[in-house]
Image (cartoon, rainbow, N blue to C red; front, top):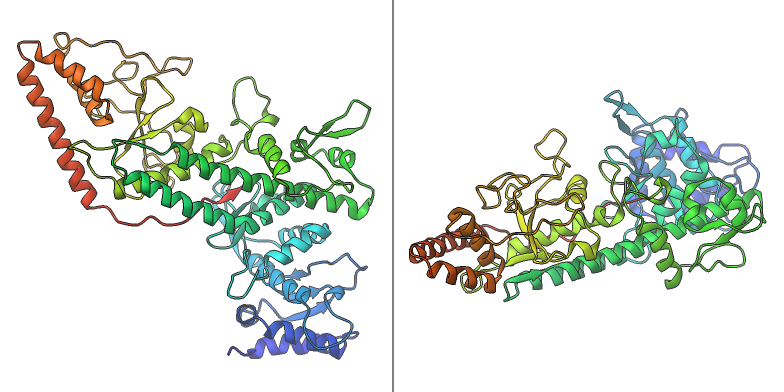
Length: 559
């Protein structure tokens, strides 16, 4: 069993010697430290590193310190008086949770972050720590949720939130990564651009992602099961639209739920100083995030709920299915920034470049995992390789945005993944490229246009009808005109091979019959069959090299 190290014993003794600290409070603090093995291990390390030198009681008014504070220069954690029980030696759950939260704050305070402007590694400042902690202490609902998130939900279960970290390299107000139990925040949002209203909303949003992580893990496992079954199917058409759609819907509900939690956290902050604060007060904050919930009413200076949302009498929002569905519509479903004809405040700009909506942010992750399943489990059917299919329009997905967000192809990432977009008639062949690579690497977070000849059509070029990604300015695919084998044998053979590989048996038979009616038909048909056989042999070799498992992991949740 882990014991208190000498440095932590000194810190506790220093607390006991302070004026006003009672033996009961000393005993409860010692009990809280010793009751959690992981917490004790971390506090021992904090003290050994000279980052924790003592504890203190808050001397502010009741309710001003709800979740504790930490000061780097003195190495002191200040605890709320309200976390201590009036009698007894047992530690309260609130005191234990406060210690966990302050250990997180301490470790965050002694971390570094990348300054992209000056390309420097800088230390987290006391100002950043103060702003983080004042935000938590400024909203009773947020303080309550943060302490709940750092507490184990049951025997043998990990607390869903265990770390704060600085965020860089992406555009987001904050993120939560359930795989490492970490909430990340942009250092500039805690310093030069600090806004307590916005930060309260962001923290409330991100902590809800921590609570939702178990449900998202279950959705991820279901996605793995379904996509594996699709990849192992005995048909040539492997349509992943439904599976991707279900995972996207789970992400939609997760984000909508988190947005509701952000509203409640900010409302609590407003009501701490103005108990009667309601919809009008929230709209009066001037924060654009509240516009997902309320809009200006007919009367001057009034606010009304957006359709579909039902507020409680105290202006809070409950996590009901109807409210989650409505919040998803107003938040998750916003189009990406730069959408023609849509005001910027009615769009979303997240992701690596800050130009993505939520569907394409989460879609990049889902598509990458579907590709790995296809490459791990798909087998040739009657000598033909199955074809990956996705209804891009139905899912609201764009290849360019997903590749700019970063698609991860874990199996042979150097080889693009061909797929058919079934929202186009006839289904149009495209490809996904591996773009989730470090900055400076080829194709890092960039859309990769088709290179002439890269998709099996040596003569393809931008604007050529044979180029599967050639589109008209309107965004609709260019029609593929009928090809004559006597006019362009190479193009005709390319089209015929594409039909065979995509499972378009009707077109393949028609084109084969056309060739058979011409003098060189038999020779060309033999050449086509040989080429297809060669493709299948290469595919079989490729499949033999694939790993047999896909990881159960999820994307980083962000707002």
